[in-house]
Length: 494
Image 1 (cartoon, rainbow, N blue to C red):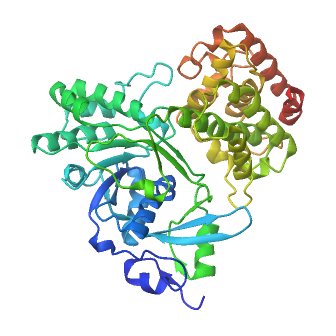
Image 2: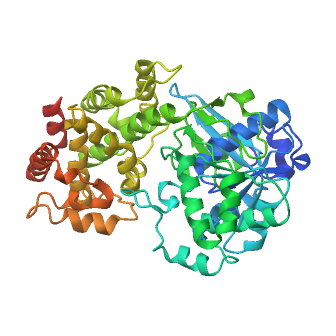
Image 3: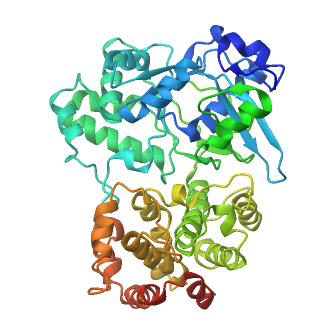
């Protein structure tokens, strides 16, 4: 390109000669959605659907105000503010086609660590109808085994003593809802968009538990007035790479400091339960259903668990990306066997879904050579993921006399991965996990106590009491430690 343009509102008309840009009047939009946790997934998913609704149907009154509650949100806040909250979504197709387009559905971004009152004011505004969340599995502050709220969190302790000085999502939600109640306003809907089974129910349980400890009368009002719809969200969204930024600059002459890349597939299934109105998302392909449970269970146990199967086994073998795993026939066969033999038999029937075709589509999506989703991203925070995605399938198969060998190898491999931190070629693995030190300490005891890793009750519950599982686990973990040939072990189980 002859000249590079900064991505901002002033340059939008010129940029529209290069790639699609918003055609709606962004200044005419009112904030109706407040979203906590503006990462790549939110920008590729909910913000994309909102942009599509505005583009096709006007939908004034549903602009998004992003919220960052942590110091770690400062970079995305600063980038989006500099770009007038505009960003580029780069859709990468399996056939090599790349479709960039500029999204305009986010109109503001507030950082709670700097301006607590500004965040509470926008959440308490009469125009705000929904507060949505992508705060990751770990952000819900509950024990993965018991499912109970963690009151030991120092930030929670602070909020219980200082309700006007919130730090966590629960402190902000209760403070904002209190402002609304005291002003005689309707409650907003709390809409979780995280990969947690029954995500709305979990958000409700945790918020009410917190609120009851802080203000019982407010908790009763929240219980009566606030809706928490369950939802299932899906779109593979890798971490933005320097090459994505470079592509926009070199190919289209656009300087976007933080674009988002994603696959073409997108899905959102949500229960139609809202406190105070909602956008007409069904006009742009969102499915509203009475019960989302079968859909979310299918997705979490097939897509999310399938990702972890490829990620952990692939990391040890030395594959760097998910699509590289899918170029290896052993991994393809293993993944499909896991889905067919261990997951499908314990899933409920999902209305309107052909399970065979759904699994075929997952294989195609994982194999997309243009996404190049890193195994390190997929393996990150496995301590928050595997207890929800993989271990429930294992437990149900143990109860119903189903196959457990394929899932058990993943657990054994996770132990080795946590202990050694190296692939089969001796190359270091990037391990990102809030429980990383604890996982490593437990795993390092394996050679003297083969069951040390699964003694972590907060992750594995009572699996250690099941002899069928422990016998198989010990056999597999000892074989991995003996020669670290994960591929040979995978082939032996097929």
